[in-house]
Structure formats: C-alpha cells, structure tokens
Length: 236
Image (tube, rainbow, N blue to C red; front, side):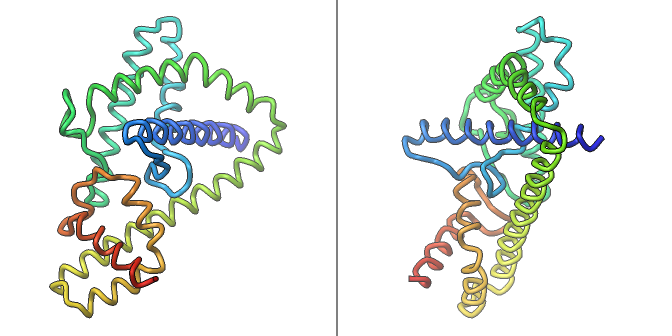
C-alpha cells in the first residue's frame, strides 16, 4: 500500500515537473523572453499536469490501440480538468488565474480549442512514450529507496502548498484591509511593512499568472504592481 502510494505520487510529481517545463518553454517562446515563474506553487511543478496525466493513465488504457480515440479522450479529460481548476480556484481565491477570452473558440475564457488540442497531443506523448519510460524507470528503484524518496518529496511538496496558500491569504487579507480603510497612508504603511517579508513570494505569484484581471474581489492587479514597486523602493 505504502509502495503503491509512493509510486503514484512520484509519477504525479514527474508529470507535474514535465508540465512546468512545457509551460516555461512555451511561454518563453511566445513572450520572446525567459519565463520561469509558472504555476500556482513556488517549486518547479504544475500539479494540474500531474493530475491530468494520472487520470489519462487510469482511464485511457482501453484506447491505447486507437490513437484517434486516445487523442479525443485526452483532449476531453484535459479540457475538463483545466475548466474545473479555473472555476474552483476563482471560487476559492476570488481570482481569475488565466483568461483565454481573446482567443478563438474559447469557453468562458477558461479553456480554448488551441490549448485543448495541444493537451490532446500531450496525452498521446504521455501514453505512448513518457509513461512507459517513467513507469519502467521507477520500477527499477528498490522499494525502500523509492518510499524514502517519495516521502521526502511529499513533505517538500506539501510544505510548498501550505506556504503558497499562506502567501495568497496574506495578499487577500491585506487587500481587503486596504479597501476597508479607504487606502489611508497609515494602513498602506502597515500593509507594506507586513508584505516586505513576503514580497518575493507575492511577486512570483503575480508573475506566474500575468493574465489575472483582478487578483481579488475589489483590488485590481495594477494597484498590486504599484505596491510591489513601493516595497522595492523601501528596501533600497
């Protein structure tokens, strides 16, 4: 049981890292500059890719001999996951983390045909090439060593998750505080002093999701960018 959980967690983490690399490379090419801040978490992984990959492995083996059906089902699974992730994150954090409204054939700005097709192709890559390779690689690791590695990485991952949630909570709390206090200079000073300790994590969060229209209910992204600049000036 422990070995099985460790095995699947490592697969999840591997695909999350692969997803992060895909995001980093594709965004760097599109923006014509080096982009490394991708994803919700601090570390180099995007869990949405790990979840999508595991679901495809569990659900799509029956289509392994039919590439067309496999592509279609991969597209559907990834699109549903991306849509639900966008919806749930917006409900929980009151934030729109990405927006495809300007792209053709989008659905509520949460998914679009271009990326759905891309994810379908990634599904073929996972099922035909990556999963056989990574699964075979993990099976060659002695069980006790694999469990130890998985345990250490799980602790790191969960710590990352907790810290990331705390950062968002800090941003959200202080955003509401500013709004409630009519942006008085005294409150702004208190908020700024509090955020100085967390500015690197907050900046990373903003850079990871440049398309966010409104980070929280009332506070626009532009105001946060100005606040970040203010923090930087105070530190110099």
